[in-house]
Image (cartoon, rainbow, N blue to C red; front, side):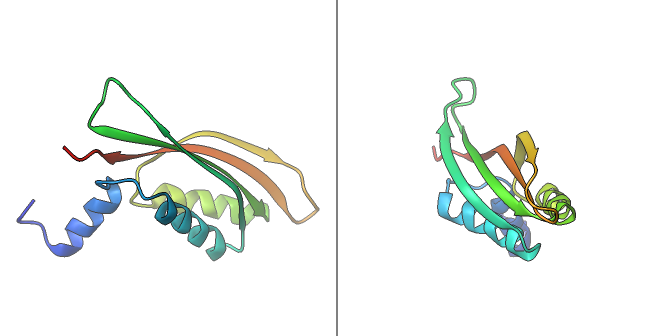
Length: 115
C-alpha cells in the first residue's frame, strides 16, 4: 500500500472507501445525472447488515432519474465505469412525456468498516 502513488491510493479509496458518506455518494450520483441533463429525485439510503462479512459495510441506495431515454442509458454506462463498486439490484422504467422518462434504480454499494 505504501508503494502506491497518491493518485492510485485516491483511486483505491474511491473503489472501496473506509467509511460511508451518504452526502458524498448522493452528490456523486447527482453530478453524473446533471452531466447528462437528468434530474435525480426520491433518493433513499439505508445501511444493510451482513453477518457473514462483518468487515464489509453495505449501503442500499434507491432513486429516480428523469430525462430522455438516451441520457439515461449514458447515465447507466457512466455509473458502470465509475470507480465505486455498485451492484444494481433493480431498474424499472416508466413512461413520462414524449421526450422524458422516469426510471427507478436500486443498488448496493460497499465500504470497509474500520477495525
